[in-house]
Image (cartoon, rainbow, N blue to C red; front, side):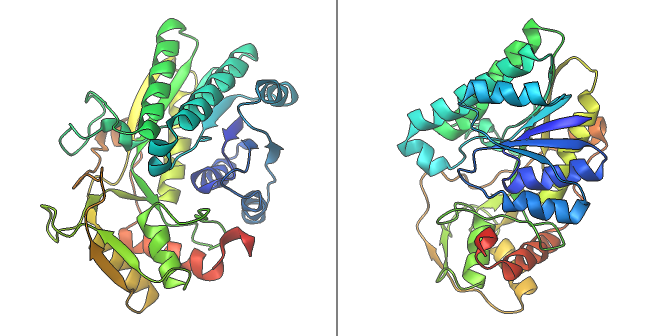
Length: 337
């Protein structure tokens, strides 16, 4: 199949492009490069021997999006593109609602005009909110607590309503947890712009000398070591989950929801120790006050993905940290060189 990947130069997107090509698919990428580099696709091509067609296009430009569909015979879409920083979304909610919702509406309108009605959407565990008990199960009532999460929730609503109204659509909503790691080659990985918002890339930048120390927000939670528990998933496992979902919904009308996670929680200090093992030395850190909005613990119930997609995580936390460190060590300044 020929698959359009929006946001395909980003961290998860580029790994998914690689997995799609390894599975024999042709790939077309749309990305506005707001928080990524097209260098990632050049490196993917070096690993797979296949060059994805790339369009430097913003989903907010509906005529340009339509032109991409007119140029390529697209069979299905995997939709990653969107703003994703929780903190920024709190301070600039209108920016997030406009970009993420309007961009998605432009995309699905273009899909419909060109008869492409199969989509895998990159949702998030943030849609579960603060009211649900762990582990999170797909049947739970969702309720995100920040504008970023609410854009994911609202896009899920849009796609669910679309699937209910038009039986020609095949829709997968993938709620995933905390992707970390990198391709084992060390050629592609996470390259956040500015100060990283997530734990592992911040640890990696401390390890490579770009940051002074790790700040651990809260050491007094009701968890085994007092620090927050999260469900970490290797980005390659996550990419393979997208390919499995794409294959599952092919020709199957309806709306499907799956958690993609390991099904276990690891604490901040556990992740730090695992990264230190990969590094071979200690990493400076300081435990400070809790960060507003952080939950003590959450992780996935991923049994539905295993049952429906024959998919589960296969890579350990140690492997995630080893692969992430290999990427950061080989690329101390990311794709910028």
